[in-house]
Structures are given as C-alpha cells and as structure tokens.
Image 1 (tube, rainbow, N blue to C red):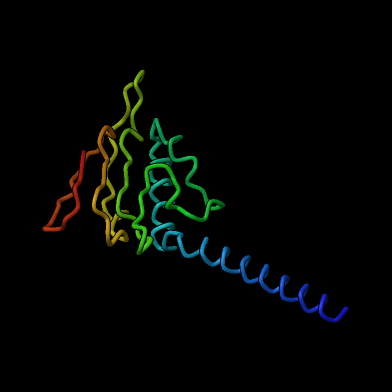
Image 2: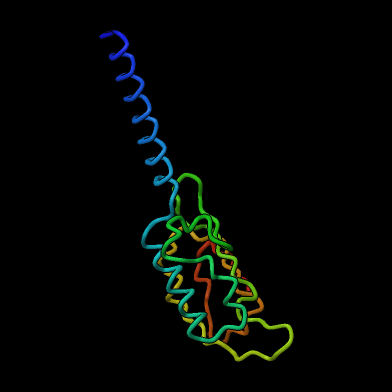
Amino acid sequence: MVKWSVMKMRQMWVWMLLMAMAFVNDRSHCCLEEERSSLLEIKAWFNHAGAAGSYELEGWDKEHFNCCNWNGVVCDNTTNRVIELRLEGVNYDFFNAVEDLDLNASLFLPFKELEILDLSANQLVGGLKNQGSMVSIFF
C-alpha cells in the first residue's frame, strides 16, 4: 500500500511539473509587454482615425496576450520582439474614398528590432524617414 502511494505521489509531481513547464513555455514565447501595448496604441490610432479597414485589427485585443499571434505581426523566435508589422490596407476601402491619415511615427519607436514595416495602401500623409536603420518601410 505504501509503495502504491509513493508511486501515485511521484506521478502527481511529474504531472504538476509538466503543467508548470507548459505554462512557462507558453508565457516565454509571448511578445514583450512594451511592444504589445504599442500595438494596442496603433490599433487605437487607426480606430480613432476612422480607418476603413480597421476591422482587420479586431484580433488585436487585451485578452489575447500573445501579440506574436496577431494578424500582421511577426516576432523573432528567440527574442520574442516584433520584427515585422504588415499593416497594409488598414485605411483602405475598395468602394469609397477614404480620408488621408496623418502618420504618427512615434507609435513605432518601441519596436527595437523591427525589420519590415508595411503601411502601404493606407492614404498616409506626413513623413517617416529611414535614418540609417535596417528597417524596410513600405508606403
């Protein structure tokens, strides 16, 4: 009876250890909180501007913790930092004319490892200079 109880206890500890590792592993592959907050600010900016296609960002939500899984967001597998933002056509409507948006470039400052920023087909005005960085920017 004691031997059976010890085996059950070991099985329970192994199960708890596996569950804990799964939780830590899931959390370790999440984007950084600073970048996640910035993505939510970008979504709010498009929504506030009345962007025609801002529905494409509906999956960007506070309840969905891992922004690396959000539409248009690509993260580095090692650093979990955002390396690509593909936001083409968020302010585009095939059937109706859309208003120009004044670009708020400061929204993109927190993305330290960003390599590709695609803002094409968004009717953006203003400027975003690529000042010696390795970021490819598409308008």
